[in-house]
Image (cartoon, rainbow, N blue to C red; front, side, top):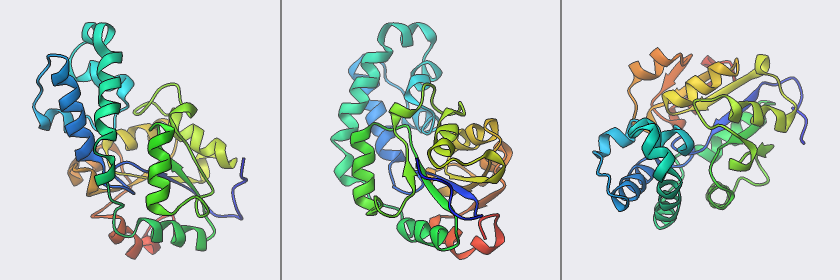
Amino acid sequence: MTSARGSGTVAVLDVDGTLVDTNYHHTLAWFRAFRRHGIVLPLWRIHRHIGMGGDQLVAALTDERTDQERGDHIRAAESELYLELIEEVQPMKGSRELIEDLRRRGHAVVLASSAKEQEIDHYLDLLDGRELADAWTTSADVQATKPAPDLVHAALDRVGGSAHDAVMIGDTPWDVHAAREAGVSTLAVLTGGFAIEELEESGAAGVFESVADLRLRLDDTPLR
C-alpha cells in the first residue's frame, strides 16, 4: 500500500468513460450479450445503465429472475464481446496530463475501476500510467460494484486515505452515487454521455465538459 502523499487530497479517478473512451463500446457489447441470450434491448436503455456494475446491471435492465437464471452467462458474454472491441478504445484527451497535474499539486492519485485485471492492464498501457498513478483497483478489490461504495473505499484503502480528504472524478450518476455513499464529493465530466442536469441532480459538486476542460479549471475545484 502506498501512503497518501504530503498534505494533498486523494484524487480517486474513475477509468471507464472518464480517462478512457469506453462507454459506447460497453453499450454495444452488452447489447450483443443480451441478444445472444434471446433478449433484445434498445441501445439507449443499456447506455443509461453504463457505469453500473455488471453484477447489478442485468437485473436493472431485465428482472431478478432473468439475472438468477441467465445473468452469469450474459455477463460472461459481455466480457468476451467487449474484449473484441477493446483495441478500438482510446484515452480521453488530457487524461495522462491530468494525472501528472494532480501529482504535481501534491495529490495521491488512485485509478478506480471494477473492471477485470486484463482490461485495467490495457488501460494502464494506453495511459502509460503504471509509474504515474499511486495505485489502482480491479474487480478483485470489490464485492459490490457501483452504485455501491465498495470501489471508492477500496481506492482510499490503497493509499491510506480518508473520505474527508478525497475527491472523485467520474462520468456517470453511478460514480456520483457511489462516492456519495462513501462520503466523498465528485467532480463529473460529460464524456460518459450523461447530461449536466443528471450529474448535478445526482450530487456532483461540479460538472466539466471533458478531462481537458477540468484540467484548465482545476484551480476552481478542491483539487487546486
